[in-house]
Length: 257
Image (cartoon, rainbow, N blue to C red; front, side, top):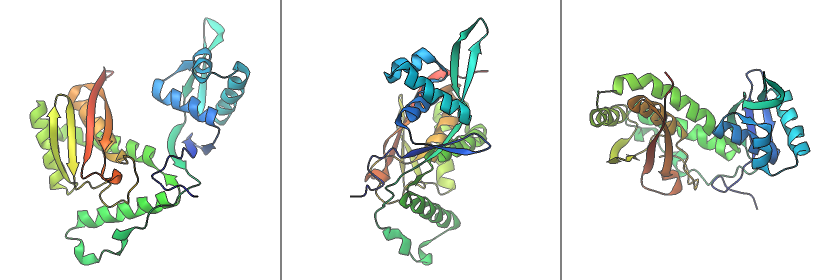
């Protein structure tokens, strides 16, 4: 039986090097790339230890990834035997062999229901994304990166000098541009609630959080507000059957100057 888009399916990872996009279907290679993406540069022994695989097996996979240009290898100038591995490719999406999505009941909505241009654009974007999900294409890494760029662009106009005023400016921005309604469950920890979500409101049931673009926006905006890198976790989502999307913002390491 085919898997729906809400079911777990790791699929084939797509990594761009700038000159080509490489499909990565090896579970070991995908684990290596995930570790480098999350943890940053790692030594050979660190990678082998986390994988629990024979060093000869790990070496073969690392050589393959380096040959494709998805990772880079740096040699310690004081000891040529010590190497550090870095992620150089960019994770741009996932392909799944099981791309069956539920019927899209919203696709027959008449044009008269679109009260303004933002609602029409929102509907169109959701239909494009749903069609890609039906085809087994997950572009959430790209959406997250795009959201971060947007967040960086608008952070300056939202910053009001203190967190309360800045959060109010963000809520007003969301409302004024038809992106939904933002309220704050709490400020410490910072928890954002969005209703009438522009990103997932017209998507079918997926069974997991899907608001990657908003996560990217919030990541950049609140990294700017706090002066620290932040982690954004979406704990509830309309695409999971919830009546809201809920984001928890956690400050992390101080940003580099």
